[in-house]
Amino acid sequence: EIKACLFDLDGVLVDTARYHYIAWRELAEELGFDFTEHDNERLKGVSRAASLNILLEIGGITLGEEEKARLAEQKNNRYVEYIAKMDSSEILPGALDFLKECREHSIKVALGSASKNAMTILNNTGLTPYFDAIIDGTHTSAAKPDPEVFLLGAQAVNIAPEHCVVFEDAEAGILAATRAGMRSVGIGSPETLGAANLVVPSLQQISVDALRESFAA
Ligand code: B16
Ligand code: MG
Image (cartoon, rainbow, N blue to C red; front, side, top):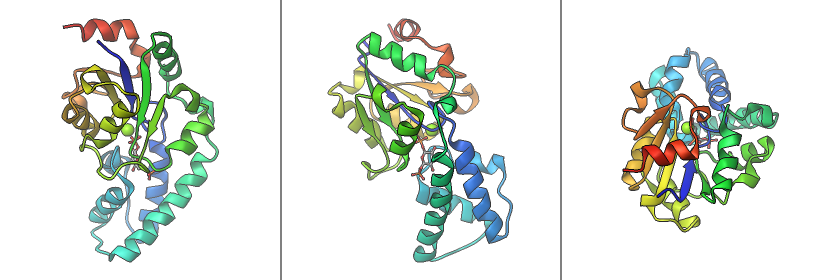
């Protein structure tokens, strides 16, 4: 039985990936190398510090911890400028309707995001009131594929993992869900999200009834 739905933020409810991408690309340009959209795929669902390490690896650059902290902050300042201008038009197709549907079925709704900027994004897009619990990068110590973020989410809404379903666009997030003992729905392509129990292109293709049916067994 499904009693809680746990949502990733970037790539599932809103498309902030392109803002992350622009901010990282600007940083790469300043460091003197190209950072492509294909490269950016590697940063999805990954924490800010780990993202910077991947970026520097692509550029073939080695830096000390202090310099890295400065660059991560510089990237974040730019990213924060972009998300400050977000509004409800940037909620991904089907997301709002599905959140409302969960509520109508008395299914608990929690956020499980790696982002430390999740609150800003939820507030600017008007999504905050749809959540019973919000767990983000400010609450966690281990990044996905560690299950921590989803276990904290389940705990916050007081539902056992076996009754939780995770919605994720990143491979590491699907793995985190499995490690948490939860079922998962991959949002995107079966090529990268094959480990999920179910894969759909967007939340537009899912309903509580369809979910219950495919997870009935
Ligand atoms: P911040 P999610 C993740 O969000 C993004 O997918 C990832 O690209 C980003 O690096 C990470 O948040 C940290 O974000 O720099 O804002 O703390 O997909 O877990 O909702
Ligand atoms: Mg994501």
